[in-house]
Amino acid sequence: MKYFSLVWSALFRRKTRTLFTLLSIMAAFLLFGLLDSVRGAFANAGHSVVGASRLITISKVSFMFALPKSLYMRIQSVPGVAEVTYANWFGGIYQDPKNFFANEAVAPNFFDVYSEFKLPAGELRAFKETRTGAVVGASLAKRFHWKIGEQIPLEATIFPQNGGSNTWTFDLVGIYHVANRREESQEDAMFFHWKYFDEARAFGRGDVGWYIEKIGQPKEADRIAQAIDAISANSDHETKTQSEDAFQSSFVSQFADIGLIVGSIMGAVFFTLILLTGNTMAQAVRERIPELAILKTIGFPNRSVLALVLAESVLLLTLGGVAGLALAEFAVSVIRTRLGAQIPMLPVGLAIWLQGLALTVLIGLVVGALPARRGMRLRIVDALAGR
Image (cartoon, rainbow, N blue to C red; front, side, top):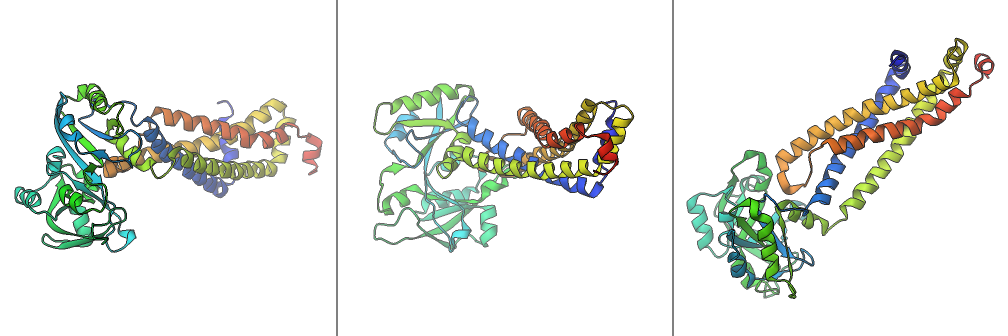
């Protein structure tokens, strides 16, 4: 701290260059915080179901494998399970692939289990009584300007109909809202009758995609999950019961290796950052060769000059890194509030902060090493002579 003012002055000697370098470092550590939050969520998903109020049961092999509907009554009979419903991913397209939204075939009691989806009594009754009835979220209805009574055609990407047609037509009978406006993103989905879907599809009849269990006592979730999975143990349809967060992670993991993607992106980002900050530090030291020579002339030993340059490099990385991590913490908080479980993310907590700060110090030392070594080995006579 004795020479902090000296280091600070050297760092901001060229304010414009330092500012743009800081912005680059901030962007890198903002990305680090966001991606590590996602990676951590996928890494931790499924480790425990303790405290979960809803569980989801899927095939132990893969989410892509269906389960027999005959499991429904057996799961319902497990002590502690208050109610069971089931669903199938449909994956239909409305008009254009870019209009993607979640669409699922669900059991009649689906909205009893997902009580946070608020649907007027009349519309709920119409959904249960209309074979081709569908319910959409308020946000989705607003997006496509849908009104109750309209017919909505979806082009199947997975499940064609018996006659070979890929077009499924649904009657819009209800529009639901979420109770918590912070979870408004959950209104971007469409649900329709599983029975209609099962009778009309060309293959897979009698199978469901997954089961959802409403738990009476969340503290018993782990015991209940084990009891549910024991039903199908050693069968050709063994199950895995997990929390909703773990289910979301499993769903996304079917399409990509999240760890590999995050690692590759961060590797590229930090490699570029090292080149950028390394060039900045090399240029800064080169411009101050006479100043470093003067420091040596008035008695600064080689190790002190080395430490000053390394401190400047680490300070540059730390300032940008802390600002980037703070922005990441704020951004993750907003994303978690707006999108809920649609994008699994952990809060930017102490672990991510410690990793980030360790990286700032490590990168600072790496990029400052060569310029600092040059300053340490500098000969006073040559520097003052401009050689």
